[in-house]
Each structure stands twice: as structure tokens, then as C-alpha cells.
Length: 297
Image (cartoon, rainbow, N blue to C red; front, side):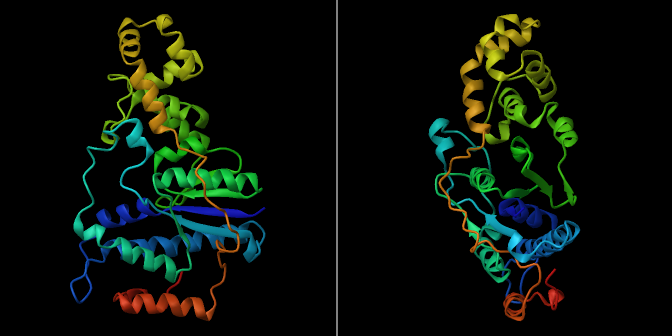
């Protein structure tokens, strides 16, 4: 069975930027996020190689990978709901300036980078996983983002690169109180104001999970709202039905983004050759990463 690792690059970069001090090159160029990203990429390489060996020494052609990025500030979700993510602050200049260098790092590590305009990286990851599934390829989503939990199913798993663990059904239930296939129902009710997803005001995750379990699905709940025992909850949901349905559209990751899965392009080398290590070394030298000298995993 072939395996495709789909890396949530923005998740890596933002975590690295805020976790590390403000590092710069000798010329004063901000480089902390890139430094942290390279550290994470090397750690991921170790984890992938270890997993491949544990699976019986998978051949090189059995492992694929790609880094996924956002190409648009606004996406189709803004057409559905113009204030979607409007409250989010823009990335500070010292972080934004590092993204081109992040792309250089990916090129140095021979990690293909993909994105699709008008869609979030999350949608592209979901669509890549869907296409891979149709080709008999398992997908591992490399991210700590809870929004990917809705995609968990046989053949599609999530690897948390910070904790170095695969997300289990128990993790999903602990976070949302339901199984993966009902995560978006809970999210649509509970909302996420930081992203401009308002759901049913006053309904939290625990209450949302209890209601979804009671009625079986979000559609069943909204169609039978009159049967909700609590008057307060009944009033909130009946007054916000349209907003809840919009929220469901916003939180559901699209799996129909047009993107090609080219296996030759996405090859992951379990063992790096001289040409590959030279590319990585040249990148380290260019950006003053002397601490990484001779390190590739």
C-alpha cells in the first residue's frame, strides 16, 4: 500500500514562528520561522522513515509527500459569508517575509508544494486525500489542526507532528464528543467566532454534541427543532437556523478541488543521495543555519 503524506505548511510555519525567539541572519533577515520549519521537516522525515521501516521496509516508491499552502487570502467561503475570517489579524511582516524562504526550504528538501486559488489549503489537503483514496493510496495528514478530524476514516489518518502521535477515534471523541463523520455537525452548531463561523450563539461543543447524538444529525435536529426539550436551546436554534446551515458550509472541507496526484512528482526518498544532501547543505549555508550542518533528518 502506498502512502501519501500531506503537510499543512501554514500550520508548521505559524507554530514555528510563535514558538521560537526572533532569529535573524547575520544580515538581519528574519529567519526564525524558517529555522523552526526546517527542524519540523527533519523530524517529519525521521518519523516517516521510522514508520516505513516498521511497516516492513517499504520501498522508496511506496512513500509520497507534498506540502500544501494557501494561494488566496479570500476563498469561496467569502462568497458564501463575506465576513468569514475577517477578524483574523494579518501575519506580521517579519513572518510574511519568510514564506518565500519556506518555499526554498521545501525545494531544498525535494518536497513538492501545492495549492489551488480560491480554496484554502485545508480543502486542497482534503481533495488530495480523496483522490489518493480513489487510487488505492493511503493518506496521512500532517497537522495539529482540529478541523482535519472530520476527514478521519479508513485510509485517511492524521499525524500530529508536535506530539508525534496519530489522532485516534478517542482523541476525536474527546475533542468533539462525536465520531469523525459528525464533527462538522457539532462545529456548525458550536461555531468558531475567531473564524467568523457563528453557529448557534450560546451553544457550546458539549451541548452541540449532546444534541447531535440525540437527533442523529444536524439536518434531523434542524428539521425537528420543535422536539428539543430545552426551551432555551430550542429558541436559539430556531432563531438561527439559516446561520447554522451557513456555518455547516463554512466548516465542511471541500473534497472536490481539481488537483492532480502525480506519483512521480511526489516521490519521497527514504534514503537521501549526495545530490539531495548537497541541495540541503547549500540552503543551510545560504541562510546561516550552521547548527544544521550535516543534518538532514
